[in-house]
Image (cartoon, rainbow, N blue to C red; front, side, top):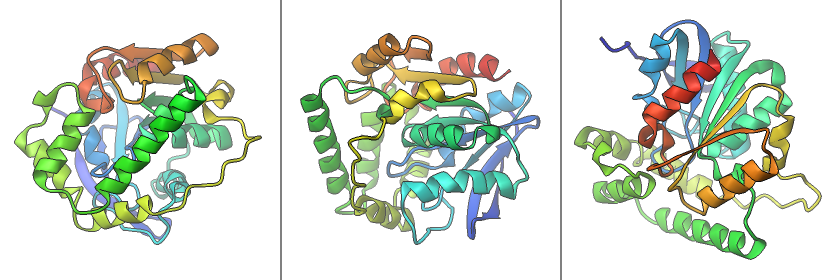
Amino acid sequence: MSATINDTSVRAAGLNLRYLESGSGHPVIFLHGGSLGSSADVFLRNMPAFAKAGFRALAFDQPGFGLSDVPEDHSAGLRRKSVLAFMDALGIKTAALVAHSQAGGMGVQIALASPERVSHLVVLGTGSLLPPLEEAKEGLDGAAQQRLERKMATHEPTIEETRKLLEANLFHHDLITSEELALRHSRSTGKNFEAFVARSGLPAAPKDPTAVPLWRRMIDVTCPLLLIYGRNDRANAYERALKLKELAPQLDLHITPDCKHLVPWDAQAEVERLTIPFLS
């Protein structure tokens, strides 16, 4: 029998945040990324194993995603603050964070700024936490990503366009069932698409040439840290992950074959095999 997943909401930081919950024990909060269609539902297939292992598995729709309220502030900073606000609303003092994609950077920042709130941190496929291979090549990757985001923000996607976006992020296309596709599409349209357009239109934060890149600061994270990347992920992730292992061999970093960017789906068994003992 699979673990029951409850679907409810809580008021936090002046917003209604929808969240999923299963099991009891030490809290493990799953944080979704920032791409169009992202939501707590990304982790529906992962949460039961953690609940069965004796954890309180939680995943919430960040502001402007899924079924949560759309905020006036669409910045990544507001999304980062919403994590601790969500914990406070549920009376959670300390939790493990499992952060996918863009949320991995948020997780590292939270662990550095509020170490007493984070017991463990698991990062899944966060490209911004990998070192560049070379400045010119990295610049081209960034420009290509910006062009893609601008193109996606021009019109609400059709269901076939939602399928193509999922296929671009998945090695195993058989995971895209009709039910999964319909759910992802519902999280990509309407108010969620409007919020995505608003986020895409935000000006880029000015770069401080003296600032230490976040990937270099991971060695300063005091809680146990686990990183899992897909061998077939975009933007030279494999080569950059190998470079990170070389530069910081003390980091617990794993590269999973036959896995693109949607690590919680493509590498579900590997994520559970590595993460559950790590948290225990």
